[in-house]
Each structure stands twice: as C-alpha cells, then as structure tokens.
Length: 314
Image 1 (cartoon, rainbow, N blue to C red):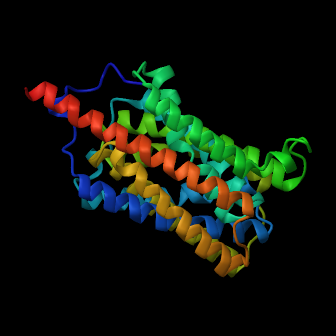
Image 2: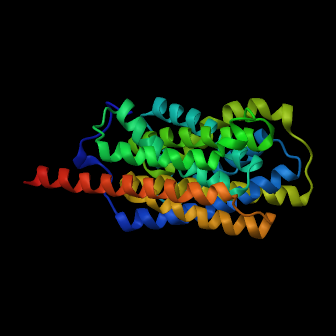
Image 3: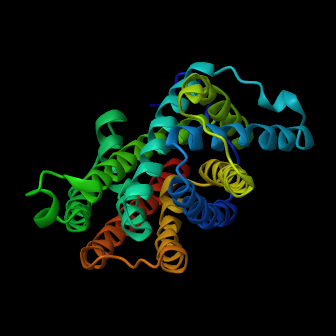
C-alpha cells in the first residue's frame, strides 16, 4: 500500500522508539477500558451502529480541540484524501468487527484472537507489498495459526458450523484481526506524510457519513447512565486512536506491535472484574503460541531493519 505520494526517507517523520512504545502501551490500556464500555453499552440494548456513531462523533471535537492547541486547524489539512477514505472504510469495518467480537465473546478470548494481527500482517506484507518473507517468518506464521485454531476451538465450532453466539463471535473477531492487519499497513503509510491528529480526524469525519445515514434507523432514547457510557466510549476511543496512530508514526510496526500483548493482561483483569469471566481452557493453550509467534516476527523484523540500516550506511 505504499503511496506514490510518499516522501523520501529524509522527509519521513522523526523516529522515537521509546515514545512509540509508551503510546502503544497507553493505547492497549485505553482499548481495554473502551471494550468494557462496548460490552456494557450492548447490555443496555444500544445498537452497535449507534455505538459506532457516538464513538466517532465524540472523537471529532476532542481531536479538533487538540489540533487547535498544537499547530492550529491548518495541521488538519491533507493532500491525500483518497488514502484517508480507504483507511476510513477499512477502519469502520474493522472497528465494527472488533466491537462485535467483544460483544459475543469473553474479553480475554476476543483479545487473544485480535493478537493474531502480526501473523496476518506478515501475509499481507508478502502479498501486497511484495516483501521478501523467509522460512523463519513463515514458520512463525504457522505456529501462530496453530494458536489461532486452538482459540477458535475447532471441536466446538467447526463441527457445529460456527452456530450460536460463541461461534459467530469467533468469526467476527477473526475478521476484525484480519482487517486490523490491513489497517496497520495503511496507517504506517499515511504516517509518512500525515501527523497522528490528521489521520484520526479524517478517519472519524469520513466514517461519519455512512454512520450518519444509518443512525435514524437504530437510535433510541437514553438515560443518564447510558449517555455516560457513550461519552466514556467516545473519550477512550479518542485516546486509543491518537495513541495507536502516534505510535505507528514514531516507531516501526515491529517495535510497537509487541506492546499489544499487554492488552491480554488488561482484558483478563477487566473481564474478571466487570463481568466475572475468565479465559477458556483453549485460550490458555492458544495464547502462548500466538504471543510467541508475534514476538518472533517482531524480533525478526527488528533484526532485518538493523541489517538494512548497516547496508545503507556502509
């Protein structure tokens, strides 16, 4: 997904590995809180499309206020509206799948499936970007897929045709992980010419078009408690978007992706505290395989980056 409009490496955003890692850790903690609110909102009977609408609508004024205090409204100007539109389309589908997976599944299980993003990112990088992928990374992908299969629980879901809420939830969560991998590549490309505020602003604004059309068909009256949940969803969503996008701008994917595994600890704690659920036995089996695969992929990418840098400076 490399754009022809991308600048030369010298014009790229300055790299700050520690800053990128810190932002990614903040994003994972905020993401877990956001998903707690997603589940509570669903339990209140609010339609998922309305949740998505308010999640995006409340982000826009927050991001705009941030832009005004950090460079002014001109910092939101872009010459890559088409790239933003593609990112918004993928982001909206991915967010809907991630919300749906959290609604239908226990938090830890849905989070574990989402941790397979690096596995799919390697596949898409090989297919879409034509990046060379050796046997080591393909081996890690295979190990990761074994972990994904364990979490999907083939004995219960494959034989049952993925029927029932749990089976549907696993398919939705897996679709969310695949879409998130595509989004990661798109955001990394946008981050070469756009700052985090610009990317988040245009994503939120452009996604409001289809959500605004759908809203009249799903909106319902809300009490103070439900409005508080929706406000919290919007605020936490803004923190997540800014942190995720900022992390990808400050550091390579291979550096920040390992921080995503902290989300599993947050989701286990939040699932137990708020909903009284703990991971299924198959999740305990699959999670280590997925995490080991992702960490190896990240380590391998980092080593290759060092080798490429040495070749350039030699």
